[in-house]
Amino acid sequence: MASSLLSSTTNASLSLFPTQTNSKSKRRISRVSCNAADNNNKDDLNISKGHRRDVLIGLGGLGAATSFTYNPFAAFANPVVTNPKSCGRPNLPAGAKPIPCCPPKIDSDNVTDFVFPPKLPPRVRKPAHLLTADEAAKYKEAIRLMRALPDDDPRSFTQQANIHCAYCHDSYVLNGSTAPPQVKVHFNWLFAPFHRWYLYFYERILGSLIKDPTFALPFWNWDHPDGMYIPDIFADRRSSLYDAKRNANHLPPVLIDLNWNRRLGDTSGDSGINLNKVYTNIAAVKAPDTFFGKNFDQGGGQFNASGTLELLHNTGHSWTGDPTDPNNEDMGSFYSSGRDPLFYSHHSNVDRLWTIWKDKFGGVDFIEDDYLNSSFLFYDHDGKLIKVNVKDSLDPSLLGYKYDDVPIPWADAKPTTTTTSVVPASTDNPPKLPLLLNNVTSFTVKRPSKSRSKVEKKKKEELLVFEVALDKSKDVKFDVLLFWKGDPTKASPKNREFAGSFVNVSHAPSPRDLKVKFIIEISDLLDDLKADDQDNIQVTLVPQYGNVPVTINDVHVSYHEHRRFRK
Image (cartoon, rainbow, N blue to C red; front, side, top):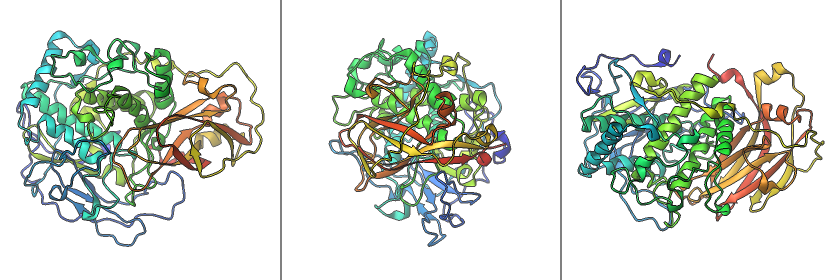
């Protein structure tokens, strides 16, 4: 259980909004000891095994210090420290209005360790479309008061939005340099815990502004047919929850399309296909590496990988943003997405899916020290700078909140195979690498092993691994089909042959391409397609949108040993 991994707690005040202050826990951030990174492991899903180092990540807009170990070739072992005083302007895409995403000038010498809130009845996060009139009114009032705070207040609406801007657009760099690597909270295993902490403090600030400690951030229930539209409370132009920079063609009652392909135009989503998509990205996923993504690569962001949870969430960003804006603001670009109140309810649902994956589908968190000891800094509802650890975020009940127990119809929405029941033996037709993906492309991938026993499959998951290079400032999507017959453009998530989608949301541009691994679990998929006896996997890639195509540098089959799972 997560609680066994949590750091020891100290008693907190039982005031209405107990402070996180512990008189013995203030510290001056200086140096952090570490071990050299293991750079000789050639496993595709290499995660640092047992190395302990504190990764201290300051958050933009909240003003914080960051402490990282950057050791790509074990050249040195001293930590690389970044602090808010060295925060620079964000690296924004062309056409974006220059904005300062760094926090206002602050004194960050003293940091307070996080203290768990007192054990009280949990705050219950409910579906946004099911809020009562009183609950909706409280939420609107809390956001109104947050918007009314001065911009230089770390609790203000502007500074809360700037958190995402600074840490998705390279404001914070390691080693005081303007060159990579920068602190990144996307395309790696920091995605889920970073956003959980982000929402925790955001929610507590809102509750304190309306003096209601029971206030809970509602979630956008886009994984249920009744909640697959932008909730009405966000569409009222007179409301503090309204944001003008949204896709005008996607306002309620239009359903979100979790498989949105811009080239097909704007049509209402299909609730059944949406459920298939959530099943494939959540219920069907076993390994934490696949679900959360790979470890944060401090060697320059060259070998990170986003998980299925993040890839599923990316479409919600792109679908919501305003296409008339050159960068799809607000939700459609990470530097601006925090300006839309819908962002936080979108991420509340993402956080909820993390809890469901663990509670109902047997998912497990990482146990590596590099993950558990990674740290972030936030300002709390009292304006105090708080240091938090990933390990303290793994059990939401200890943070004082839970999610309303609503139906999850996607749990039984497993896609079905096409009418063809026999999969023909594929011939050897390897891809010509590097492959510039600007057209529908089919090829085969050699399998190191086939017809594995149930014991072998239980021990090791078969993976299809893509090494992808792309301009990360561009929105990109391509789909992956296995053993597909017929017109590839007609395939959809309702088909079992539809293995997954790679989706990028615009974030910081770079002088070099972002190189990332895209990983798909295929053991169960091959069984369902009756293709486990095949020597080769027939793969079809279908580019859906992106002005600049991606490059596929490698495609291969690998095996994930389940020894990394928590027992």
